[in-house]
Image (cartoon, rainbow over all chains, first blue to last red; front, side, top):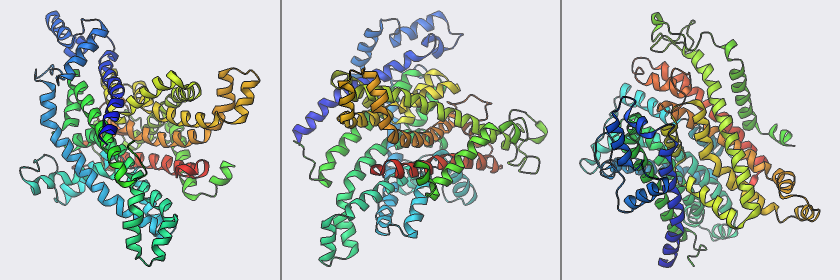
Length: 314
Length: 273
């Protein structure tokens, strides 16, 4: 297991280098002089020179990348042009909001998708199954930000059930914090719930055809036990991969959801920084989220063998 | 064969009908729209739905119905072009990786892995942040982030088709690599490509509207669906209709492509079901 983990981490190195290069290269896609774009056309030559020097734009490209990578390895994501604060510091302050949002969205989507996917497979080709399929296809078709706006209108403004905007950390006041996060996490989790539910249904259908399931039924086990204890565990492995991949949708979708609900997370910070043309922050946020996504998928791969022992770590 | 199977798939047909409707609305927008979508009318600011303004008017008195109708054009333009962009690059890169293997395969697929290491919408946001909010940039950004999806599919298909006897025969006849790839191998990868392209059209519509909503898509006052929702956001408390219709338009368009995509997947590539 440890050898497998070490090997996976080694394989990650070229991918992470390419990820870092892509993020580094982003700033060089800016049409014209990035310093002028960031500081505005009225900036003084001294200000422009200082930004060029701070970002290393006056250096050859290969050296810029080497310097940037060197800083990253030391945990230095650069400094915000506008606030002059270290980007990593700001990311650390905002990331708990984003991880709370995405985790609650994940919990919501799993609570909905796993039971409904199992039930849809159990009721395959019945009216319940068709209704389920219709629900999931609607789930992947409704834009999350619109769902968020509608949820705000109905549940916050008209029914007054939940606060419309704002954030209270769960670790300060769990129940109050949860009230603030219900609408954003449901809004964000709907798409993932639909995708995972469909995956659960199709994996369950494949497993339910296998002989060991027939054997379990022949032994006289209740259908509930057959479905949950015997079929779901094996059907869960491909679903787990989908969950890992879909977590990226949550991290990306959080950018939009945080904007709709004015949550002070990484996504909102990213969007605000884009408006302010604070590119070191933009680079830092994108790189950080990509790293989190890569590590989550690594963790999912490691969990895989628990659900599918045929997967070997050798 | 596809059509005869599709004609028996009710949900697929509904999806196709929705797509055809969207295409017709996009093509005939000047005839369907009742107002100029950019025409400001101060006297009609935030007018509720009526016989004059079917979907009401926005904060500048612009007719939301006409803006939604013209928004169909923007949405289809961006989604179709970005999918074509992604498919063109993805097919070539995936075919090269699968056909030549070795270092070409390693380099191409590591680059694809790197692009896929980003949540798609996040990378698109990053690209738009530096390229600037222009419609063609949305096409480039979305096309770029979707390239790996096509490359992976084509590479996988090429790997399996490459082993077939007709490819060996073509090689023995002295055909060039390009001729073998484009004439013999790629036609056998069409089915999964069509399924992927249809699904991607749905993603692209959602992504384009999200980018516009964030102010990173079509620049205002272009009547993209995301822009209409972004404008409406500040006025929705008293004018709910401003947000309802553009959202329904996005949902309907995406639903059409999703329904057709599901049906095509069942017909063309049952393994993916």
